[in-house]
Structures are given as structure tokens and as C-alpha cells.
Amino acid sequence: MSTRNQRLKEKNKWKTLFYSLLALNIAFIILIAALVFWPGSRGDITLNEENEKNVSSEFFVRTTKKNLNDLINTYLAQLQKGSEHQYQVSLDDDVQLIGELPVFSTTVPLAVHLEPLVQENGDIILKLRSISVGLLELPNKIIMEFMKEYLSMPEWVTIVPNEEAIYLAVTEIKMKSNFHVAVEHIDLEANNLVFKINVPYQSFGID
Image (cartoon, rainbow, N blue to C red; front, side):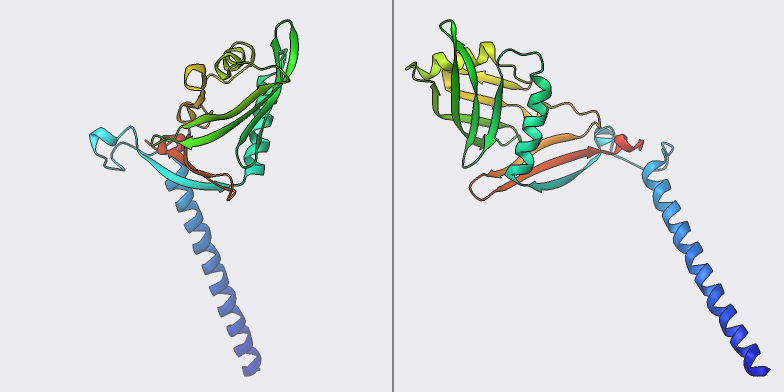
């Protein structure tokens, strides 16, 4: 009987330890959730006045050409709904824009090769490498003028014919999540693309 009582006591002991540990883990999870997601009062966190409204964390996201390519063209497909002249972007050893343009009362195929240059502020300049519209021979500036006039572009994209470049103001892209994106590094040949995501604490209700 004594052996049986010992076993029961030992079993109860382990059961008690198990439930105590479980309760501790649940309490820890609730505490973390409360700190992250519940809005606190002004006195909970002390911040410098100049940074109080701009507190955030930065994350670096590494991706591939394929992933970014799929994202870009899904976005462009939505943007170009109802547009007469379509185009797509392909990321290879450079940035390729393939589509069509109305030139001299006809529609001709468009092929543009661009080199991405990351700017210090996180934006990108796509510098023209080569451009063609079918078999027509036209100055690069003229073709880019047609692109600027007829192709639907996001509001943060600016075609600059005089400089033979396209400016991508990536840092001005507006997101519903209130996150901010900047380009950190792009090496298409090495398939190495890095973006910086800035996440304001206010996005989680933290003042």
C-alpha cells in the first residue's frame, strides 16, 4: 500500500508541476500580447518629445527576382484594367519593360532594358540601356515621351525622357498597413534583393 501511495503522490506531484508550468506559459503569452497589442496610457512609456510620434522598428527583407516579378506584374495587372496599352515587367540581368505603344496611327511592340540604381534615400532610378519600338528608328527621348503619354504608371513612378530614366519613388508608396518601404540593395545578377520595412509602433495601437 505504501508503494501505491508513493506512486500516487509522485503522479500528483508531476501533474501539479505540469499545470503550474502550463499556467505560467499562458500568463507569459497574455503578458506579451498585452504589451504588443493593447494601447497603453501616456505614462506607460517615456519618449523623447521630438521622436514621440515617429517611433518605429526596421526590418530587412530579402527576396528573389521571381517573387518580386510576380508581385510587380500582379500590381500592374490591376493598375492597367481598362487601359488600351498594356505592358509587363521582367527582372533578369536587368529590368525589362515589354509592351506596346501607339506610334504614327499604329500599334508597335515596345522593348525597354533598364539598369536599376538604388538611391541613398531608398528610391530607385531605372537608367535606360536600350529601347526599341518594332522596326521603327526613333530617338530614345521620343519613345520615352510616348511611354509617358500612353502607358498607365503608378503615381510614384515618373518617366523622365530628357534624362532617359524612370524614377521610382518607392519611399512614397502608400500602404494600408501604414508600413514604409525603402530599397536597401539590388543585385539582379546575383538574385539578391533587399528591402527595408519601417513599422511604426502606432500601427499596433501603441502610442
